[in-house]
Image 1 (tube, rainbow, N blue to C red):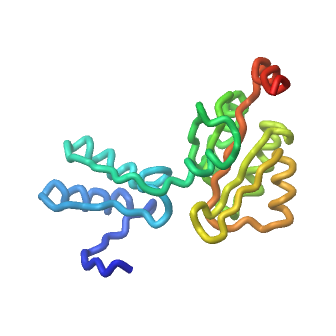
Image 2: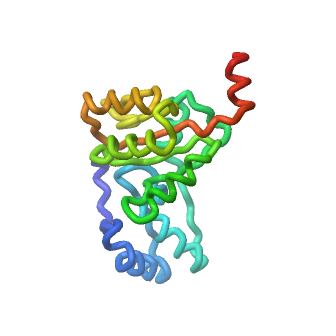
Length: 190
């Protein structure tokens, strides 16, 4: 699009070890490198983290230009508390998933997840099992794109919405943390 004529090297989950070492070797030999992602900020729930970590370990200066990060606008648009939150990224698909959900059921901070549209309903249903159907959630998709959408409500309501409306695009789930007694009393005063 910008008519930039520099060689591109693909670097993704399935070639990160082999390509990462090759890229690092070129950087250590004096070349410059720019890590660009086609979906959000490089190194946030992205294998770019491993390349950055290796550069730091080798004493290579790493500069970061701030750019689009899906979870920040999703958190702001959620209307859920955002003074303290935890970012989980993608949950494990198999091993450790249920253990992690049990741990997160006790989390008081707002919790942020990334999810695929193909797994969204399964994930929301599991959240309802572990966190309760009345837990508040916000699901944002296609942030900063033409078909941006945010659906808010209880887990039960949002599950119903996406049962009828097929989820599409890149998805961020923002889940309310566990309310403690003090939070419930403050909510009544508002």
